[in-house]
Image (cartoon, rainbow, N blue to C red; front, top):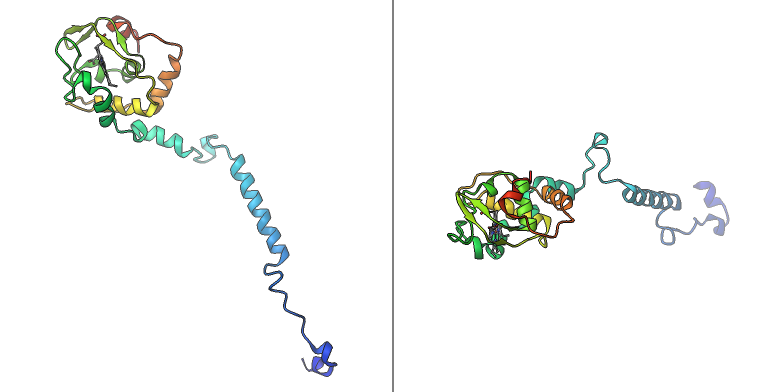
Length: 195
Ligand code: HEC
């Protein structure tokens, strides 16, 4: 310091501050930019459903489909708007015309067969709780997988029915397995062949 004061006035001056023109040291800025670029590369090249032994890399969508039957769709509301007109809100149907869903083995039995009934409908003689029906159950394949899962879960768990939930993934599998089908199931005889 004393050394400096002995110098002529101009050399005594300190350098002008440069914080305003370069607030962040260039090296640090370059390092931060490199980290951001590496992060972007890492995220975009990350495989969502890679080998689980490398850690849990399942995506949120995959987990939601596997854990939430119907993935958030409201089965009760869908039933009221799509099915209750024929099968009645009480699930008892209309004697001789629309079969009951309450206590029906088609509903509480195989979940995959129930999904097939909902996807493609039924046309042909069908025994429900000891009564033979021969009407037309419309196909519902225009509904989303999660909606059909929610509906199936709703009918399996309402009006005293105590069957387990149906998952969206099951509906997706069943839809893919019968993608080529354009006609309804031909009544109880053909449905008996559906696992
Ligand atoms: C237009 C009237 C109608 C609508 C709407 C309808 N169904 Fe049906 N459903 C029928 C008829 C009729 C049968 C019997 C078909 C037969 O006799 O071959 C049936 C049969 C069924 C069966 C198998 C038999 C039983 O009683 O267990 C299930 C399960 C079923 N329907 C569920 C549903 C669900 C869930 C919905 C709403 C997405 C729905 N249906 C909408 C008329 C309807």
